[in-house]
Length: 138
Image (cartoon, rainbow, N blue to C red; front, top):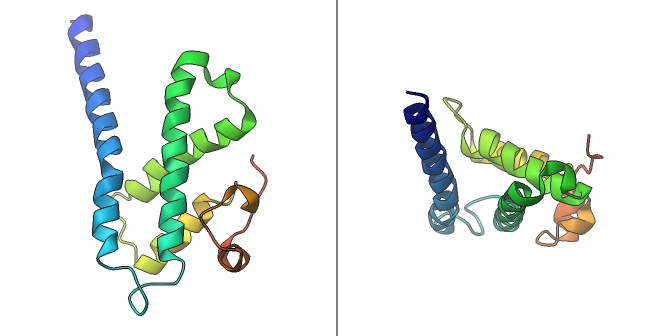
């Protein structure tokens, strides 16, 4: 019985991971039709690109962590790992919550708060000045 439960849990974990891996191309295709002057906020494209880049790095760190363990990760990698978890749990999985586009963009910026502006290469200096609140990592 325990072996069956472990097998089911492993399959569910693999299915969840596959869904997470497939979500970014879907989000990107949906967004491309609605981004542009007069359609969304000026930071939309760059913010989305930055969020995707941070999430991709977080997923890479997650794979590395399975080899070296979390304690073996440098602080910078731990920041990306924490970002990936927050991105999945609050940005992608919003549950029953309904957010406006502006609220979604603002949430994206809040998720980037732990990163220094110098690490956020896909955003302009004007966008960083207007929206980014760099906060030290807890």
